[in-house]
Amino acid sequence: MDHKIPLFIVTGASGSGKTYVIKELRRMMPDFDIFDPDHLVEFLGHDWEKIRNIGLRVARNIAQSGRMTIICGTMMPWDIEKCADYPFFKHVYIT
Image (cartoon, rainbow, N blue to C red; front, side, top):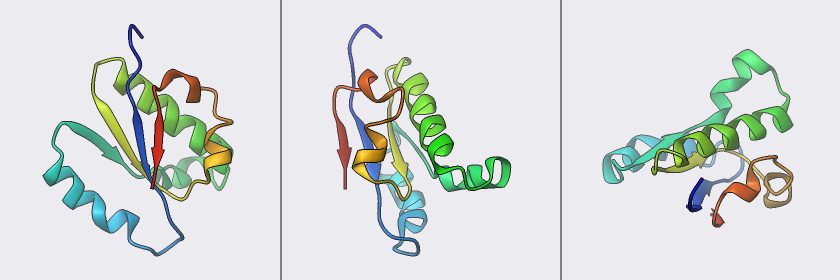
């Protein structure tokens, strides 16, 4: 990428409302791609390391088109930092 852009992650405990806010975030922030990596469990099982890496890879590919991403999923900052694509973002904001 020519220049790095930030990545935003909304995290929290299971059942805390992350999936619930996705529809509203999409309405409020149409220039962002917003997704829930929990939907990958159906295909990948509960391999959370793989799910995190795929989520960041998807966000990286989106960033290459100049768009920003919000990932809504249960993730710990120290696990996100281990992802292969973590260095490709200007900053990763986790809330």
